[in-house]
Image 1 (tube, helix red, strand yellow):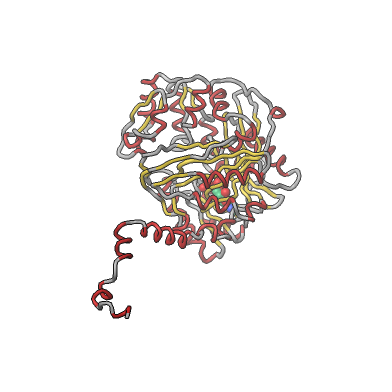
Image 2 (cartoon, rainbow, N blue to C red):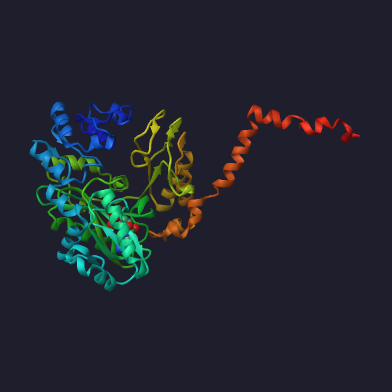
Amino acid sequence: MRIIKTLRELKLRSAIVYHDLDAGAPAVSMADMAIAVSGRTPVAAYLDTAQIIAAAREARVGAIHPGYGFLAENAEFARTVAESGFAFVGPTPESIELMGDKIRARNFVQRNGFPVVPSAIEEDDPASFILRARSVGVPLLVKASAGGGGKGMRIVRDFDTLKNAIAQARSEAQRYFGDDRLYIERYIEKPRHIEVQVLGDAFGNVIHLFERECSVQRRFQKIIEEAPASTLPPGLRERICETAVGIARAANYRNAGTVEFIVDGEEFYFLEMNTRLQVEHPVTEMITGIDIVAEQLYVAGGYALSFSQPDIVSTGHAIEARVYAEAPERGFAPARGKVLVLDYPRGRDLRIDSGILQGQQITTAFDPLLAKVIVHSPTRNEAIQKAERAMQELVLLGCETNASFLARILADEQFLSGQVHTGYLDENPQLTAGDSASDLSTFLAAAALLTRPVRDSADAVPELHASLGGWRNA
Ligand code: ADP
């Protein structure tokens, strides 16, 4: 839907592929043309390159945009798209290959003189891996080269647990990515996650659209993002943004991408590069006024970037909150259900990117992201207030969401002060737990009292007392 929106604005037509289970999804009705792809599961269908190319031929498209997931970071897919005569809306297959593999990306970045966290890479010499890991020193983070979404990561604080953590990370990496190559990094305590949006074209121009801060995370996954970063030591923002551009330039990067860093005080280290449009891109669009999807399309169409670095200005503060179908209060258990009532907040400088409709069934087949609430205000405080109000106004009934959890974070003193790091939610379990247990029982009791059977039995004279006759009143 996000991509179709820009296509419409540019007066371009859209075609979408969908699996039967998604036939009722709003994106399918929004597109000018929709072509069914089949597979045992929707995931299998959306990963089927041959069917997608056949659909592209049928729709006679000029370009294929891979979206955010599935094939967006698949070099083979990008190559096949180009070889089939379509423009791939994304970087070259070579860039995806280089940056899609964390070990390769990390080595490349280090070779080019940019900062990375001290590490040990298993494939360099498997026999000495454990020994080399020990020399990095605890705490350590075991990571998967093919990792994503926080999968395949294990923190090690004590060498006795190292072997076990390696085994666990390896099996998780194999299960999720079919690739069990591992490496170990120094685990930075309480870092901030800061990333830079970059854009490159086919003529060697590379620019940045400033940074985003994504330090509010649960299990290594982002839930609230903002732009610009709340507070940074003087000069650090410039250094981080320039480093991101340097890395993208060294990689001969084309199209939109994100260079991610972890920041430890004044120090920062390359984490990874995402070679696609990211979920949190709207905060950057809000502060720069640039439609990143439109830029992706221009670059894929062979045009040069229409602006240079000094043309890009950052205004105000933007915040995005991710509304997930999950229950933070119950260990972030995934939620499902039918969307019975859906009413989004409205207002100036408030944007909702949503892929759901009233009446739609929410399943656990995909990522639990339901909608993104994005706000823009002159200052950070105002943006936070606006986001909090928006979370309170959001009505989504029929499927549990994390909306009240997001509202609790947005109202939290520590978040307001900008003193947030990636361990913030772990250190503040009360934000996750909420006080919903007691609220919920109050609401349930009130609701129960409004039903006929409960009211009748509450009003009725208990049988035992009735059988005793009227002596009590005597
Ligand atoms: P993924 O691709 O799975 O999202 P990333 O490498 O992007 O993995 O890291 C995700 C998150 O994990 C980071 O935002 C950060 O919170 C944490 N993380 C990754 N590497 C380190 C590290 N060396 N030290 C501390 N935290 C880290």
